[in-house]
Length: 291
Length: 324
Image (tube, rainbow over all chains, first blue to last red; front, side, top):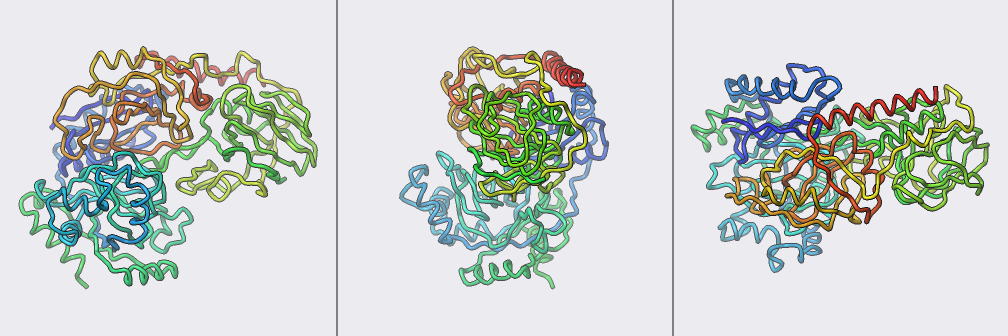
């Protein structure tokens, strides 16, 4: 697979590994950005991995754009040889699906939606061929998800479903973006799930809400003391459906700063995953649920 | 020496030269939209060029000074008044303890920079005092200033003579119509050749949605896309891509209708194709565009982009020399 290189003005190089989303494209983008970081190239100021692409910001006073471009192309050969194995972590994220707050918000923006008669999750269930919303929630929460990009605003994770392509959920974004989304909404657009880290505009369908903060500019939340952003690309997430009572309980724990997410260290191999998707996922969940 | 905020203006924020290094997490560089104007304001009061100033958009705040000090207003033609008396922009001004700085109505441009000797000394987050309201970083508690705020100011180190001024030929604002130089690229191949030519021929107008995150434009012809089978993950609209990073200055055209140029508080990524990127030398100009301003996008190559960048660096150096 050969990437497409292009300049974003005189300060950015944009590399599209593949037009299509796939874990292969994500791993290659991640491996190339790691290679660029390790090479410590003079003039490189920002290294931003994305789902199936990445972007390098540089200072053209320190390195000529053409020189950096050649250097990046050389790194692609190295990245192609690299084994797609990642030492990472799996995190359980509680989700209160069909909560009253995202419901109130989605009702306010019905005229911007494809199906004003249904809720976002009813619409998503129907167009993905699920008979009931409960079946859809089961599909959304049963398998793990890969954090394939962090960005948009304030540490928002994009998550890619770890199932074969024919089982992947796909939902279009709103016809016109909303001007409001509750903080910590679990959303969906295209083939990606996301968590809105802060309140604000958004175009993804809204399925539910998590009580777990993932961005804290004051760094007071116990698991965000070291850094204000929780997620990084390569994290693996398992959604855990919770009831209103559990949500309220989690929220109290968050307020008392005693909430701590369940996190386990795992090794993820893309080859193993491609050989046996369900088996690999089962092993990941076994690690998450042990002890 | 604190400064008391009596009225806030429209959206007056503390800004410096920004916080590079966190874009990969969706935290943009931020900082002054017109960086040359911020540098000039700081030079005029003897500050480091990157010290924090107030960035006022369209309308100025009212500020009361609690000690004698030096101030300077640059960028937009937003005439300052000290105790009601109109004074010059781009000039070192003396204010006395108890005096109030206010502003007349906007004559030209969009954003004025207010420097105070010693620099605004609100707490820094991630290495910068720049206000990024979406992420609640920098500024006064992560937000724009409000009446009743008391802004801390650092200690002034160098004095500059009252009346020192930046010569008119070294100031910079947009022409009429405004011209923004663009390096085509990124996903320009998604657009038909004829439509891309048209994009650069049309005269666009700044829309009302124009802020620190991005500037939207209207009035040009809708984009004609090259046919394709939507790639998995991109979405069905011809303007969709698999969500990717957005360069600062990149021009996205959601649904092919209204171009948006991302600016200092850019969202770091998303699912819309981009047709090219405004060159670094012209980013400052965007911050001075008012809604309804006629604007043309001028196609340039990398060679031109780099020489324009050198010209901007030389202009800043000339400014330093003029004040030395």
